[in-house]
Each structure stands twice: as structure tokens, then as C-alpha cells.
Image (cartoon, rainbow, N blue to C red; front, side, top):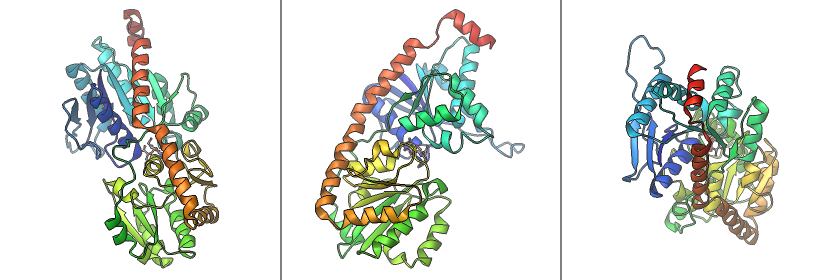
Length: 388
Ligand code: GMT
């Protein structure tokens, strides 16, 4: 199959999933064309089946905001046409589902039908999509996609609640690649971070409000009061300055390291004892799954799709949003009982195996085939679509 993948080439989860999906599909013999404005961070390997088409904006003085949607749509038309793609798979509804619809209409004028599959990732529905300045177009674009997937049952449910959706949404969970994410002995690194054998807590995110990173600091303060511990904060984003201030105010700076954006997350997870994810909203929680694959139990909130990934009392614990006392209590319980921690580590790995890339990729392939088999191709249907 020849597949075009559109995503954000940033450190957000949707871009990571899209990139790893594309790389995995290429390894399984598909031809994959990434179409985006920068090389995605996880697109690091050369493979003969992978192509990258950069979307570039011309700097014209009239444009205060470069018209990315138009340049992306034009690029999609060009790539679908010249590379003879079979389908477009766009990740994150805004603006990708809308832009893909526009490209589809342009191609229809040239008698070329390109099926479009949209994967909903989370904030495109729960935070941004639901916002009145985007909502009508997001709803329209989801309904006009030939196939729609969501990364958890919870996100599918929220999409039906927030919008008037006239079609089925398939749940295909996010996945993890165990060849990359697995427990490894990194004693030298562990000694450098925690020379006295302190417990190591880790948080990874894009430091946006929705992640409630300040709760990580409050949980850590309570844990630190009970035992020697270190906190590694991975990522960067708009909340970082406030967090650095809070860290000084709580007098925790000696035990907290802001590591910034990192590519080799697996090396950090390899030394972690506990992963903290206190998000306000989380459609899936890819970072938590990657931690679990490295045998790191998770302390998280019980919001969105997190209970589908982190099993309360087995792979970690779930608490209500903002209940830092409960999160700290659970963290202390696990960190002060080595036997319990080891059991949770094993359980976390076992649960993560349900999301093995080798199980999930065939689900995408089957869904692609299903969409190709069922989407409208007849001349009469094309004519109807053209006249819409
Ligand atoms: O919130 C983020 O980290 C960014 C966002 C994205 O789209 O890049 O993440 C969403 O998609 C991830 C991949 O499917 C999910 O694992 C995250 O849970 C989801 N984030 C939220 O729902 C807040």
C-alpha cells in the first residue's frame, strides 16, 4: 500500500504515534510518505520505503499568518497525484482532517478519489476541538473523513458527546515498540542521578496546563518528606518558568532536575522507580505506556483513557484530578515496599504487552483495507460528491 501520513512534527504524542506507525508500516513493506513542515523527531532511521515531503511556506509580506493550510493542501494534492498514493492518514483533526478534505475535493475535480482516515488523539477533541472557534469545522471534517479512529474508548465516547458525529469511530489503541522501550541496566546513569540510592521519580510531558505539572512537584514534596528521592522532569513548554519558580519556593531544587526535551526517553525510564502523570485530561497517556514497558509503575489521575492503560492497584494507582495527597500516599506506599514495587513493575510490563506495536499495527492495516474496500469509488458517487 502507498500511504501518506500527515502529522505534527513536534514532541507531542500524536506526532510520535504517527511517526512510529509510519516507520512500522514501512518495515512491513508499505511505502510511506510523511508530509509535514519539519522532519518529525522520531523519524531518525533511513528506510527505502520511507519518503519525506517538507511543506514550505513562501514568505510573502502580506501574510501576517502564513497560510499553512493552503500550502499543506496543495502539497497533499501534489504528493497523492505524483506518488500515486492509495490513502491519506492524518493525525490530529485540527487542521489536518480539514486540509485533507480540501485536498480530496481538489483531487476529485481531477477524477481522482483519495480516501482519508483521521486519527483523533485527544486535545484535538477535548481541549481545542471543543472550542467554539474550531468546533463546527472539526465536526464537519470528522464526518467527511472516510475512516475515523480514536486512541481510546474514552476519546471515542467524548467525541460522540461533544459533536454530532454521523459515523462509526474505530478504537485503535496507541502502542509501544519493545525493541526500544524495555528495562535496561543503566547503573552508571542511576549513580550519577541518585548517588545515595535515592528513589527516582520521572515525569514526561509538554509542560502545558492540561498536564498539571505543578501537581508533580507537590506530590514529590510529600514523597521527599518521607524518603530520600530525586525527580526528573523531561520536556518543555509554556509552564516551565512557573514550575522553576515553584521548585525554588518549595526549596526542592537540589532534588529536581529539569532535563528539557529529550530523544532517548528510554534511557531515563531505565533508571526510574515511578512515573507520575497527574493530567487534567489525557485521552490515552502514551508516556505512561512507555514507562510501563520499561517496568515503571504509574501514579496517575483517573481521567479520560488513563484507566484503560494504567490499572488501579495493579500497574500503579489512579487518583482524582488534583488530589496530590492521595497520589503521594500511593507513591510512598509503593516506594517503601520493595516487594510490592517489584510486583507492580511486573504487572506494568504485562499490561504494556497488550499494546505491543506488533499487535496494533495489523489493526491499522486491516482498517486501511476496510476503508479502501468500502469507501465510495463508483463514477455515480464521484459525480454526487463533485456536485456537493
Ligand atoms: O497532550 C499531549 O501530550 C499532546 C497530544 C498530541 O496530540 O500530541 O497528546 C495526545 O495524544 C497522545 C497520542 O495519541 C495521547 O497519548 C495523549 O494522551 C493525548 N493528550 C491528551 O489527551 C491531553
